[in-house]
Length: 114
Image (cartoon, rainbow, N blue to C red; front, side, top):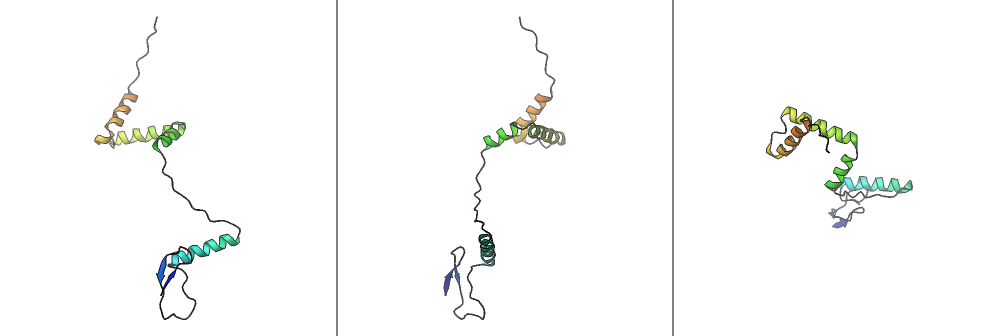
């Protein structure tokens, strides 16, 4: 016989010759455990919350780093350490290594304009 899980609705097979004890209500032990947690939360007056993972945009992450002096400092140190260890020798990191070299060069003093 086929029954539907009391929690998720997924169909599961139940024996036509039931064993002693309570009949199965859940498709898996995970659903049984989650159903128990949901019942306890409901008894305490809480509601179930579903988290939806949303992809963060790269521009938002870059802006967050640039708004934090400590984050900028951490990235610069990490890139410098990687460059020292030779970890930026790969072709995909060549532009980053070039920028680090440019930043390390002493800047020339600006001349006064008339």
